[in-house]
Image 1 (cartoon, rainbow, N blue to C red):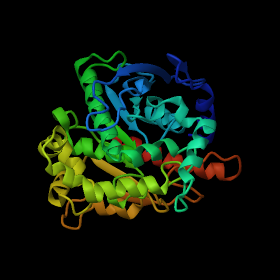
Image 2: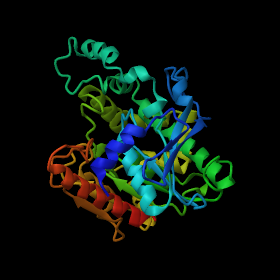
Image 3: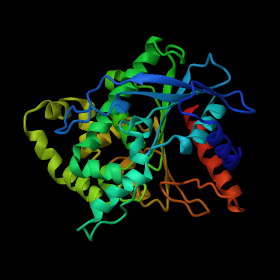
Image 4: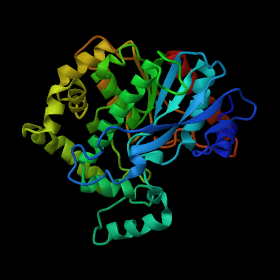
Length: 377
């Protein structure tokens, strides 16, 4: 397994608009599959996000294993504010190789190709960065890479929930397509496991706990750099969101969110009466619906595994451990805290370097993906 070499190869051949991509020297291919979301992106918003057509109709890559008759699938979910699949191609490739599974890279609502291309245009976004900084001396970590998400969450913090809500039920649709044989690529009745990173892990936990339509009763979830309740995360980053946006959503979900649920509305009804809604509420803070959360996590202890990173400052290992290994229960969800022997960050756990450190990064990547494959196979 040569991570650095394979990363560069896959980056060079990947075209998100190509219907099929053959990977040189490999029997694995990549097929682009189309998807149409049935969920209203404005479900609980005051703003109009339905005009963003990219979020409603989009495509997603599927890595096809050599044995196309296999009924094994891994759903790969990415991190917050990702705008490209490049980082994840080699992850998906080796998960497919090691497990013989189809690997589906499914974009979270308003991320990757579900967002306008203008959101990653440095020239266009830099003007918004300057505008946001005028008269605000306290702002930090504001960049062209995070300005679109930062502005949107500051304006409407409920968008954080709304994006997850839409994605969760898009995944339910995808799962039902696979189960019923309506998926164009994946064989009917295939079993689906999940590899989830960062905020994708947060979303996956809620889906597993909520288990809509009992679709995830037999699924396994491997989490990397994820597994913590929201309040133990620290989302301020040049690649994720600025400090103003993070303060806004932190204050909203820790202080205001539950008050809004007291008022009668479709939003509050969903959060009160559905298990997936309650799962989201319980994943905001360790003290919130603690018994509900710990009971569900305990029941899932054989289906979940998490690898945290010691130097991760965005989703610290302590928050993951405290969430998945509750002190009030004996049953433990397996959590391992690793520390790679090179400079890494949450946002870039496997940096691509052209020096002697590349071999160390390659070995660390192999260690992670092999551990995930053994759990998900």
